[in-house]
Amino acid sequence: MSNQQIYVNLPVKNLEASRAFFGALGFSFNPQFSDDNAACMIVSQDHIYVMLLAEPFFQTFISKKIADARTSTEVLLCLSRDSRAAVDDTVAKAVAAGGSIPREAQDHGFMYQHAFEDLDGHIWELAYMESMPPSEGQ
Image (cartoon, rainbow, N blue to C red; front, top):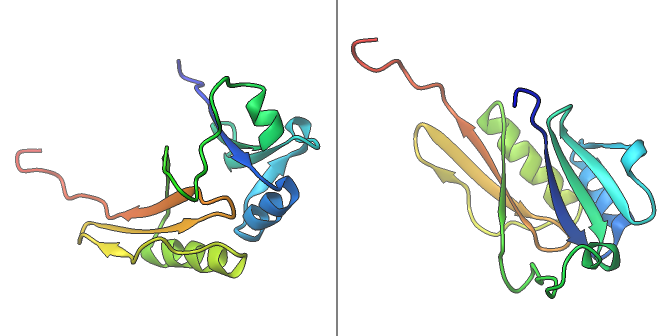
């Protein structure tokens, strides 16, 4: 299991608008897995991808109703960042691209968190964790 990958599938109302939104945050897309129904957003090359799927296409994979992320929350997505400034920078880019801030930043000392909502209301958490000092006896 050394070469595991994760593909998170998210329904979006407007695929091109979502592509532009995440492009403004600095994400790139794999054209091999992108078309008029889907955009394969690269989070971590060779490991983590988010498949932005147009809602009608997303619906073909499920028998349940698609949750409206503006009125209910089914998932929280969390990405790590290299610094507090990088967390704040990503949130600022999201707001500038049309996203919103669901809550204020949280500083837990060893961990700093902030979040944004994308154009469809999906909540993206961003976290920076300081390296922990070794425990006693190590």
